[in-house]
Length: 408
Length: 135
Image 1: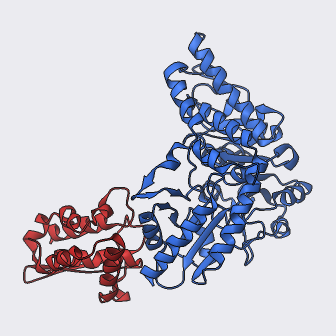
Image 2: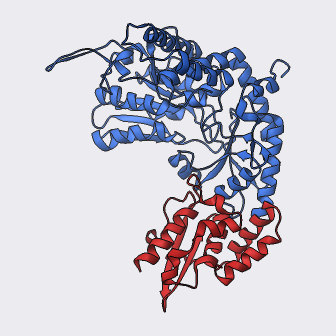
Image 3: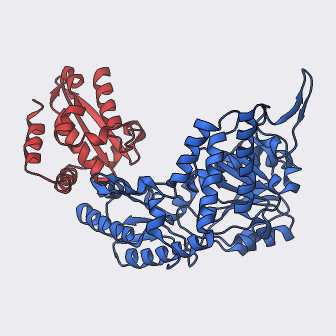
């Protein structure tokens, strides 16, 4: 931790010094959305006050400037994800849009009724509902693979579910509820040996560890900008060139076309073919600054620091014998979902914590099938970021002690 | 002046200085409330817009309004109990006149009424008022 100055990092995030309900904010809802450093806030202000025009379509000075700034983000995302060819990066609004693009643009184009998609039971709704659309509308079959008691996903169990009808495996890199890091490398290697493409939902994974997609070799990898210290409404998806070649456009409109006549339309080359309409220009520019910021700290350093937070939180929360933590994987990242023994509801707990200035999420965490698998209606989730501290773990424990006292 | 029962809660609250004691009180009110029978916890009685599960059943007897309610969350259950003290025993025609926001404000509990809150107190009040208006 000597090289990781968390106090300095915290000073980069203005919101972290505010109070909530008269207490210093303890923001532990990073799994839902992260806070923004001043450089990102400044970039948004600068873009609108000095550098704003529509992109890709004007020959005037500001349009060129905005286009340059916007397009440079493709390269930043590629660097962040360890991708050499930036044309494999499609800029969008986040993982939900990215996976919907794969469902509409790729899956609908290459799948037949009766074809199968393999999902793990711990997927986020963003990596479930687009596939349900295909099930409802085109007779695609969803096959679910359970996690074990610790919340681990056995790569072999995923590979064993492959049949000649399997056309895609769609799994998370890091569970937004259990914190489990999935061994996606083994899944990708095994699946590719059988000719099955793999989509990885990196919405949480890319936030907590270094990612190198050229090494990993997956076909699709979706990320969400607002969880990566970037503005809401920003994001990207990596799509391997071979897969892009199998796609047809999803959203139609400006920017994604080369020529439109009354009778014909010819499309722009990928990745532009998949970016219709005026994009989130400023959001995307902000995302570039956010990723540069995270890379300047170093994703390896972030991962190492978060490991310390995870270990400390595991120790401290583990000592509360009335607290049930969901997910006990050895690979667990800094995400802790829990329930209290007894009648206390997740919303009761989060309400008490909120009074103490502690922000956690309560509910189903957009993971209905996992909650069903775990046999619980709702849980609380404390999700940490690299700007959280050990003291904030202590504050959470204090808040939980009070909740336990008030609610039991 | 609200109902006598509600005024009693207001008086009790005056002795409770910090939010922890107030929440403790609300939680206790919920715990001491007779639970709704499981048979009544049906879809028709469910209040939507609540993150936890909430049920309400209204009755009118001799022109007097009353409701029973329950929730699977303890704090929400306590708030149901508070609302029962506010609305139960009121003449049907007077239900619409009760300013629940102002009354809960006297208890410092009106934070539960903001649009962002998903515990459903707002939905409960809407349900109470719309049911009373339609009766």
